[in-house]
Length: 279
Ligand code: PAF
Image (cartoon, rainbow, N blue to C red; front, side):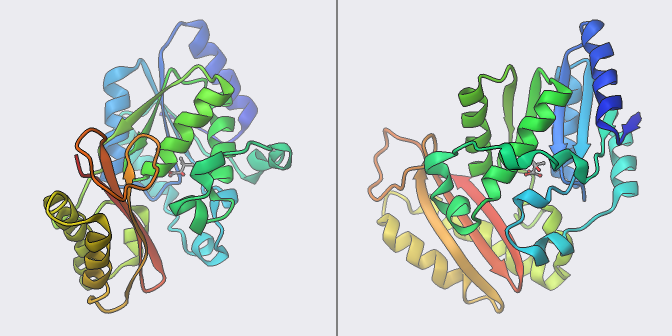
């Protein structure tokens, strides 16, 4: 496995691979890798000649400086995990990579006004900038993203379409702990007891799924908030039922359109997101 910190060296490696006609699968990450990330690398391994991963904690997508400061950073462990998963090339740039972000005026539109976009101003613009920059450098045929970040996936698919980028976006299922908690780098900041409480998020989403045809969305959302907030230290930031394609809110459930429940929950000062396709 080759590790590259310089953009120009990375571009040289990619140019050589492209000359050889290799198909490139790309897994962008912010490090602190867990089994969810590794499942993306393994899928990329099965579907491409070359697997490229990036590790970069992108300051542009953190609207909360404390969250950025506390974001777990374990580069040596990450590199070992990537090597074990047979990744070929890892890009680990420094902050020079975001040097020309000021000129990036992409308007994300509706997705920036709801849920993650509403509660984290500037977050998706930061994500869009770094992902587009990585796509330009890595030139992947396919790029792999976890469905845990459901809204992020919608933003990236839209951006790829808006800019006409020649890459296929591959959504991959959320990987969960045995108790149902969605794997996330932020889980490293939870105690074992808190991880047990956090499993209540998935239980709540399943309650919504199991009762979707017998109770109104508003009632299910109220139940979710009450149930989560029974756990000490847990606070629901939002819970929404949305059309799974365009993310518009669903106030009345019709079997013709598919629905996803999306939530963000604080456990102490750790912000956790999750979602579940309802049908
Ligand atoms: O999902 C993430 O880890 C990040 O948002 C991404 C896609 C690596 C961009 O920094």
